[in-house]
Image 1: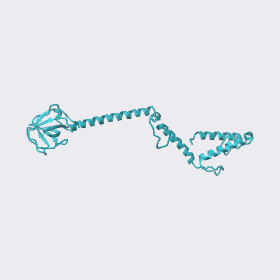
Image 2: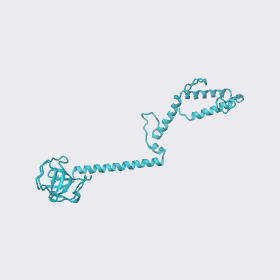
Image 3: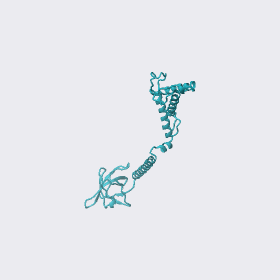
Image 4: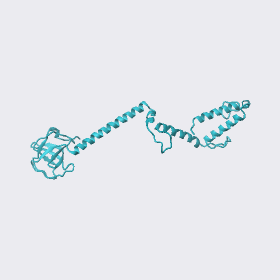
Length: 240
């Protein structure tokens, strides 16, 4: 549906119309652009009343317009034959045009932004550059991060830490007192440190059977060293 215009088109009513009439016979054939159908319209002024022309036909004698009466806060009134009918641009038409332009501009901007973001994600599939550039406010969360990427990494670290503390550990076979994985690692690490300090010289002479533990060491010194290395590796992977 489109709003139509024609410069300087002015005609006159061939017959008078009453308040409820929706067809107006005029004495001049309008320009082709104003011979509307299929949803196209144009605005006209008759005296103080604005009407919207929604259709046109010609019966061989005089052209006839189909109209919606009393547009844009005007009132339908009786009009006499001979009154002028003029194609005009109204305030409502201007507002519709501005709204349409604004919508088109907003759509274009949104499309451009979406295209830019999609391009960034294609160029940086992990999204790291984008995430690093997005500010993050840590006031409510208590995190120290000030951008989204750092916040994600910091939360991931806390999750890793909480995971080991929340995983139950059964000390019945080991003789440890710990009941969660983190405490068990700390307790074993403490015992290893104690053993290393108490017998650093002759531990290598003491035979160790690795069949139950899965270690490769065959003496106590090597077993302690191997276990300490494993603990250090595990500890390096967690954030307490």
